[in-house]
Image (tube, rainbow, N blue to C red; front, side, top):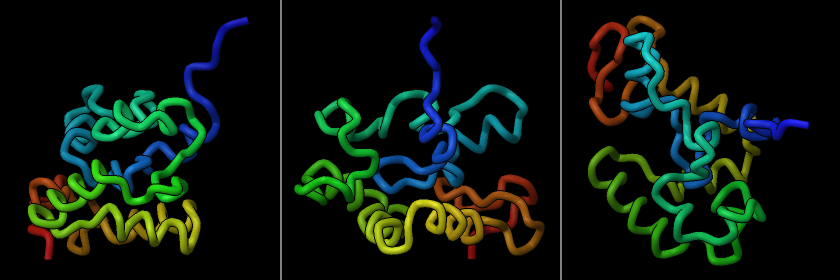
Length: 141
């Protein structure tokens, strides 16, 4: 019997990184979709469970939690550092994002993220790192 490459949870929440990042607005994820090349498919599908935090978090590595907000030490220092960087550079707080996901549930949070990161000009995909729509080039408002 062969081992499953991806579990059902990882496939369902491909774009919901444990750290609160929405992979659907990431430059690496979007580049693969735009060019038709195999780019990043999201932290969960690559079995990274958050490239920034997983290596330092035994709970994520062992799979005892699926989102950082499930941890009794939330937010940890590593997450605070990542959150600070993204808040300063891009105006996006992973901690606030995780609080929202905990409040409304992962499914509703993912839908909010899809809606929030859809280009109002063309319906395309907005990139947080480049502050533009990858489909039409319109700047993020």
